[in-house]
Length: 126
Image (tube, rainbow, N blue to C red):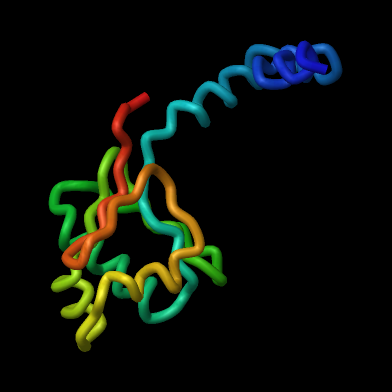
C-alpha cells in the first residue's frame, strides 16, 4: 500500500497505466510549488468588498479572483492583507473582522486575524 501511494505521489503509477510519467510528475510538481494565499468566501457583499479591499490593501501585488458562483477565491503570492477600515469603506458600514469568519469557507496559506486586519501568509516560499 505504501509503495502504491509513493508511486501515485511521484506520478510513476500513472506512467505504467497511461504512459504519461514525466508530464504527470511535472504537473504534480507545479501544483506543489504554489505560493498563493488568501481567503475563499461565500459569494455576496462581503466577498465583493474583500476583493476591492484586497486590491487596495495590497498595492503592487497582482490579486487573482476566481468566481465559482457560490464562492470567490481571492489570492496572491506570499501574503495578502485585508484591513478592517478598508472593508468598512468597501461595505459602506461599520465592520468587525470577526464578521469575515462567517463567510470564510476556506483559505490558502496560514491565517492571522486580529481586530484591525486579517493576514493570509506563507512562512516559507516554495
